[in-house]
Image 1 (tube, helix red, strand yellow):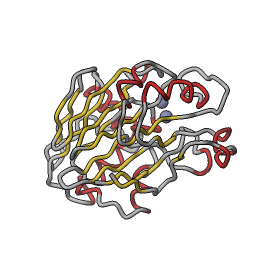
Image 2 (cartoon, rainbow, N blue to C red):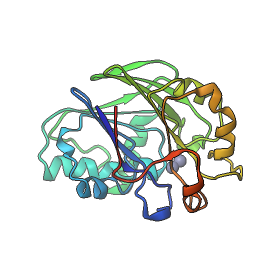
Image 3 (cartoon, rainbow, N blue to C red):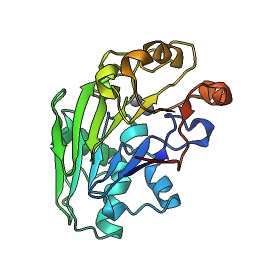
Image 4 (cartoon, protein in one colour):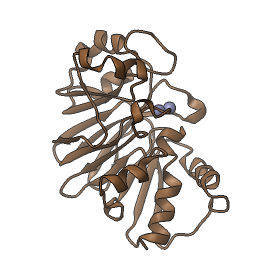
Length: 245
Ligand SMILES: [Zn+2]
Ligand SMILES: [Zn+2]
């Protein structure tokens, strides 16, 4: 199993990085975690086969996490002539948010009938759900619930735990999300400066002893973080980077 960073940027393209999107592939699993606006461009660049993806997990409804969905859906239907079922899983309210996201991207597509079965799965916060070969537990994080409820995810697949903070400032929910995970992908928007709705790395550092991930990878970094990357004591994501699990 491996995870590839399709995009590890923030909402503003800092450092020329693509918006948030990770591709998790194993023996039976083939899923995207978030699908930010630039994801289809990056997947083309990385030669990722979109037709083989069978699930998309969405953490919240900011465009840098879901804006690529209309492109993905229309390409699947009209260009790839997809026939395999697709599950899109996300926070409660997903069904109406999905329709809004499609409609903003391509007016008239909110209720488009696809040639493939589409299952929109609203996840219950705190409750483990099984989606294909993946078990996912969604946690409520502290970001901006006008785009939520905003989630972080703890995935269990093929004997490994993959944890993702989503976008969030510090919350004790991160302990449950990332506890002793094989990889914990955590947003770190700033180095020291506390900022509402996002994580300052200095805050994460103080709490890391409670999470104890086996491997921590920082993502969603602002220009402030990117400029200081060489001096950071932690691993940082790069677009295209592959993590073997
Ligand atoms: Zn974001
Ligand atoms: Zn966000």
